[in-house]
Image 1 (tube, rainbow, N blue to C red):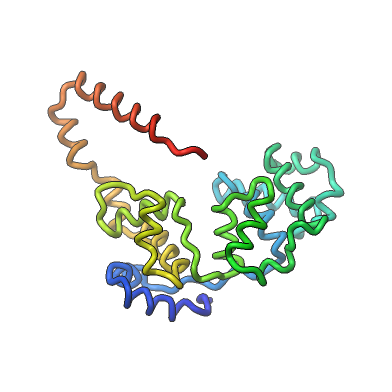
Image 2: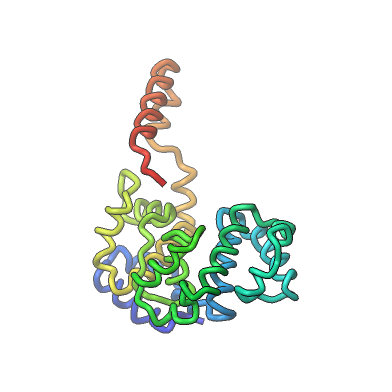
Length: 248
């Protein structure tokens, strides 16, 4: 089913941003409703398991994780009752084992008000979740968007969002997170829906063909640039990347 505010949000985005309006037409559907099944704790443990894994691999590991608890999402107390070795046996990495147990401890001792998260504002949810090991701003934002259904979240550091903004708005360079936030001011209070459409834009045929098409600069280099000049250019580019890389 569609998100309860999806039609209103799409209409608003069309009005304030014609480029986004065209993208909405191209995608041709509305954002889905939040994923309400299960518990907040279950949604967060699932998010941790899925971090940096392909969907299929993560699904397999998460299925084994639930199998430890009778084929269902466990409570925090149940997670704390099993050993690290049992958690590792289902395919969880050492780090993710630490993260899930730390989340369970925060919930169990009351420092993370898991059952009241939906009552808190966005900033308070972000602060509460990122206090747990392994839950960064991006994971907390995904929880806000797809679990709590908050309509005004813009994950500006997400690489997919940045690439989509570059493609949809025909920018020469990949925008910085700050530039994405500046451009996205007009999408508020429906930035979540704008982000969803930007992700969908990467699935459109024109986006795929743009990724396959070599840039004019690369094509020129392939045809006539001497190897020595190419090596020098690559070395210079690598040096620039090294000195401008942002801290994690």
